[in-house]
Image 1: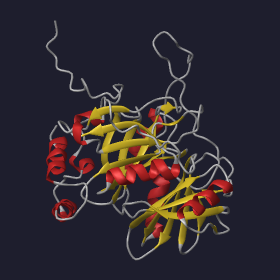
Image 2 (image 1 turned 120 degrees about the vertical axis):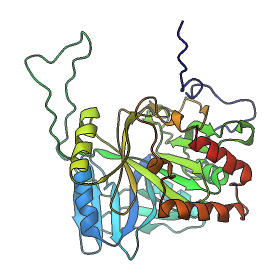
Image 3 (image 1 turned 180 degrees about the vertical axis):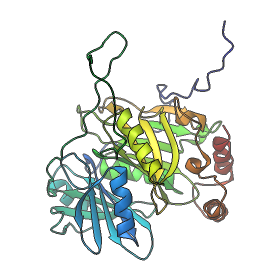
Image 4 (image 1 turned 90 degrees about the horizontal axis):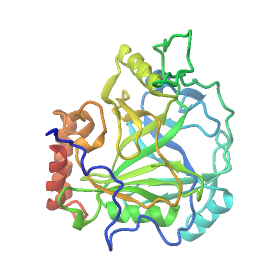
Length: 377
């Protein structure tokens, strides 16, 4: 009989809600968005941003003196829009609605005005603000970029299933070709209010809830939200929301073909001197193979592959939030990924944390104790 302790016991989210807990969806949302369209950033050095983007696996769709549009190989809109600015900042996400009628419905319901997007993007948009102050753009009928040549997944011999014969595996150490934008993670001091806003306004539904250890009775502190496409499966999460001492971007994720593309692409980034944050591993919530990097402006970005897809029939899972519960396998989560690496960033985070405790928001001393427990669990 083995005495080995499984650190993941009880962390998987197949267990559902208890009576009276958050249902994870709104009864009558205003609209149901279909996907993320793109993310918008502001950066002072577009040349440096483009250099990293190419190493990470993006293709430049548009380059002007004041704007950079980056795309994946899949057809559709660009994944990332970067505008020249005095400082580095995340400006917000854009979600793709089913059609212009949904954009107009959302504009009417919120008292906002729908406007035409620039000709380089096309289509219609309405700009909203979530309770944490993040600008949220909902778009429809944008220009469709045609597909680029794809990076084909390798052909594998699995056990006795051996389709590859008289051929070797030699993945090239080159940039992993980004296929598409997968998700963005946002931290809010008003997590519950912000969560309910996305469920109500955009029709997102929760795939998994996380709560601080020993604080389930206080409700969740993180949720992984997917698009409600009815019977059509969607990514496990398009948006992830977490409670924290500041309203801030955490990371964004971009799909690549397979594990070899992810790993060889990571070696290419490492060879070119870019900062590796954490990986390679496989997540629990969402199941993705992951590898995290930081761009020259300090923004965390993720290569992922093989993520879960759920239709709208699955109810939310519930699990405690722990550092060891971030991955099924792989190296321990790094101090850089967890945001506790010594340096100026940690000092800023500590000051932000103290400031948050003085304000009227959801991040109180009890939540602080829970967060500190997560970092050491």
